[in-house]
Image 1 (cartoon, rainbow, N blue to C red):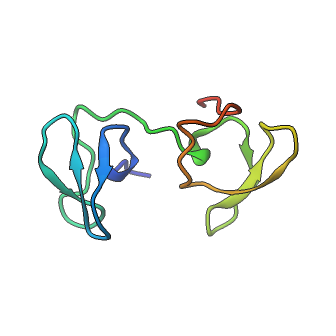
Image 2 (cartoon, helix red, strand yellow):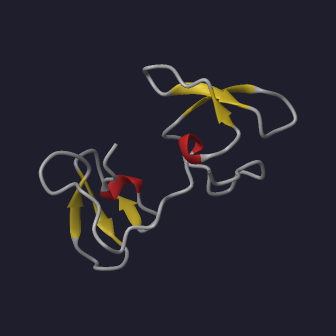
Length: 88
């Protein structure tokens, strides 16, 4: 799977089509042409990048095992403030 600006820690979402790079201060598309990550890419903390995220289905819904109670979670959910997050 190729990394996109959207998967970067430096990505700031602006609307449904684009975001901004916190490093370059330039506009970047969420997907499609020009959405590939740049050399300054830093993996964002998302459930799908966590050791405690398991059994993801084709829609990116899986199980979080990193908190007191197991529960379902989306792989794309931001986990920057999750106390159970552990990078893969």
